[in-house]
Length: 269
Image (cartoon, rainbow, N blue to C red):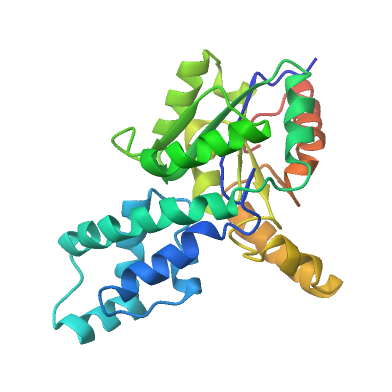
């Protein structure tokens, strides 16, 4: 039996939506509604944050902030974030079902963890309205975590530890070093390290890669190696304990964490 009591997973790019594609078009279209063209690369930078915070970060990035000043004759403001968010959220709700397919190996990995009596929870940068659409689709496909904590449920989102701690409290699991956080973004890994849990980063299926499953399958081996190296470096920089290719590799990562616990090691050590 594993020493780990719970695994808390992200959603897009982790369990569903290979490449974390659903939010990207929504960000680009939302800014375009206000006369500012952004690139997918601009939108991907802060991925993992609560979506209001994400829009705030994109709008205040140097390139986008300059474009906003040129288009509107003034600096980007919090009121602008509110206005863009009001456009973005329905767009993301509309797109999330089209990107709700499970990442290969996800359901088998979850079943393997449950077979060790490990509880499954989740946190997400998605808002409750977005998750109200995605959760039933995932449940119909066989995935229903014990708890889903959304951006906006608590006073602060990622990379604060509050969503993690709330999920742990809801599931009745402690201490933090018996919990694993799994995410495809550095911000999500930061959420886990702030909460004091073990952290497992996903290199190839999420935001850092950005490719759809079909696009990824067509990549040459050297490109895949470059993506893996870049993602590993970004995850290591924020304190990830282990970086794996995809959720299919998660049971082996949990087994490695069990070995570290048996050797007396702690998260981040």
